[in-house]
Length: 299
View 1 (cartoon, rainbow, N blue to C red):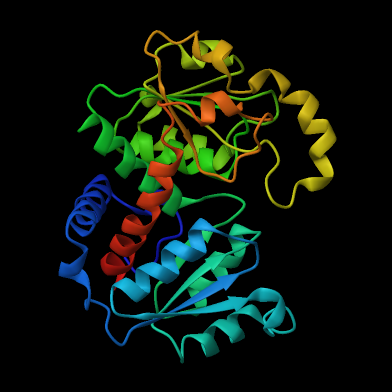
View 2 (tube, rainbow, N blue to C red):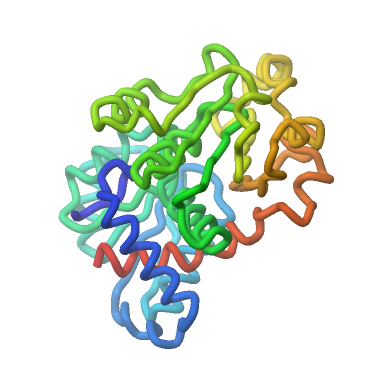
């Protein structure tokens, strides 16, 4: 494969290979120090970023390569043809990582470029985040054989990718969202068409979702680009907050995951985010190791 736009493009074997490679990189980073010497990665950002930018930029540096940060607003991408701009960018670099508003933009880039294109986040998917999270889950539980995952909140890009990652690896996942905020229909249809429906349950009941969960995952109720919906979403999602009352509904005292940045007191309370069961900074660290694995995998 040339690109990484969504986890559905990966086979289960690909995912396990990435997890294995990331684990090796994390255990012995010096072994990989010069693997990408003289390689250059363009970091193209239409949206703001902390973990994605730093993990890819540091990752390239630690692999012996270089990264060039490009702010979408200070380039001519917004003035001309996106395919034309990408065809020019690929003349100067060996790969492109892009964080965009619309997933369609990444598809256009992929079609125009002969070099790898990596999805650093779109409105539809966030594959790098979930691959890193699967690494975290594997480190905590050793394998996925008895793991159950719950998602409570908005059926957003992170949720979409989590569904794809879990169902690919046969990890049962229960997603609880308010009505009209379910995961993207394309993701649900992909799960059905690939005979993985037995691993996905969707409901509107957070208490039911967390009941058998080993992992409880949530994310912001208002994603970038949805700011004009804030007041409405705050009312709709009020009962989907991850707090100790909700956790008490689980029979397993689940680990807590959040891709960050977190809005403390909104989708998750301070005491839960800062608890001993919280994996949020473990997840953040693993972004670095997984980004390195993705880069090596694609190169």
